[in-house]
Image 1: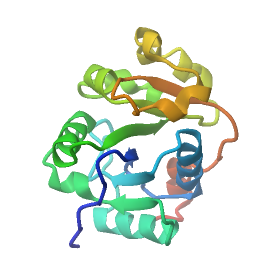
Image 2 (image 1 turned 90 degrees about the vertical axis):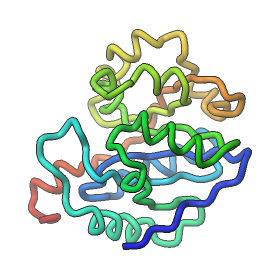
Image 3 (image 1 turned 60 degrees about the vertical axis):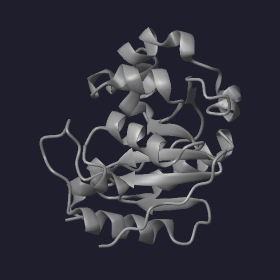
Image 4 (image 1 turned 90 degrees about the horizontal axis):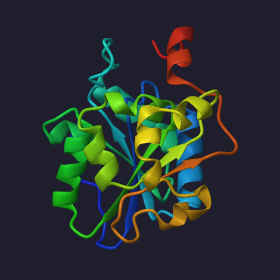
Amino acid sequence: MIQRRPFAMPGQRIGLLGGSFDPPHPGHLHITSRALKAAALDRVWWLVSPGNPLKERGPAELDRRVAAARALVGRHPRVEVTDIERHLGSPYTANTLMQLHKRYPGVRFVWLMGADNLANFHRWERWERIIETVPMLVLARPHEQLRAGLSPAARRYARLRVPETAATGLGRDGRPGWALLTGPMSPHSSTEIRGTGAWG
């Protein structure tokens, strides 16, 4: 599959929702919609990852996941599905962000992730560099709020946390910071969908 590079203009604020999307589901759309509104983002890119270094089981074939994500997103004017990570030469988010900053000078990126990922964020490669250099919006996931708020990353970087009412400022001044967004949550889970056999 030939993938064109996503387009962004200097000054735009782009949310990056990374993950395996194995499979993509309405919960991904839900947190994307919430992030667009809460952080007043110009666009959100879904970064469909070739694989997750923290998971022993590999995901479904990448082109299949990209096609499924695009079918789910449809013609949403502010959401783009991309497999750009496969071309950046590393499975690690820290490297992805470094490469994106080089390729898109002047674009303000905001990393988006579910609260379940914040709970395990301290296990990510160069996680301190990510949180110290890239604004992050953490979105509510069922049964994960307390664990996320008490996670090693949340405790260590409590000084960078901003109220969720200030999420619209993430990425505007180039400074790091993160917010934990509460509110309505989607019950959908890729793990549960795979467990039903519906994804195959």
